[in-house]
Image (cartoon, rainbow, N blue to C red; front, side, top):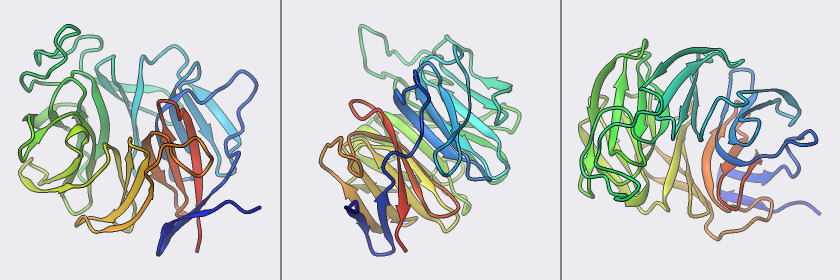
Length: 299
């Protein structure tokens, strides 16, 4: 029996059950993020004994690396030039690597969080600070600058030069425009605007590339990851069991899920999302979900 079609309009999908063939002893773990390179190879950044697993479109495992190198696999970004960036949340670091895992440079001081007033005893961000305290995601701007969202125990977005020099930071704790409550993802669009997933404020905020607040979109269900495709369509993974597809002006094109489920084709806890050159969608899940699902776009 065919699996149900989800989505709406031009954005309808059918899950490819059983995608991702894992060898004996491998498991998905908590899948922090997923990204696709220029050859449509799929990079799954996860919290298992094999933190980076690389697949072809058919779901065959091509490579794995990173064993013993990461604390909490969280954010991943692959640029159009196939530059790879990873964010390790509890190591308080963002890294640039080659696609086969060679480290090129690290931003932040590993294992040395910045002083935001957040501690194990007082889990509140009292003030914004520099890089990093539990960072979450990264995105490459058109000019080669890197933006990093920071994060669980900070309330900032940082912009770095292509070599990792800090250029600017913006944001502070709160609920007002330009303020954040768990800034969880950032995406630098080709039009120069920067989109930020303000997770616990349940909104996406829009900024100029210099950090000036332009707009806020409410109605999101704990947005965790923003991805924008080559047609300037935005895909949002939302922790509360939902995926939203919208325009860069915030017009919703399709919504899927909304009820927590482990059934293939439904969602438990989406945390990462990416779309390949064929329009197929990959959704990474954490919590009880702990899986990577591939959805084939129905034309």
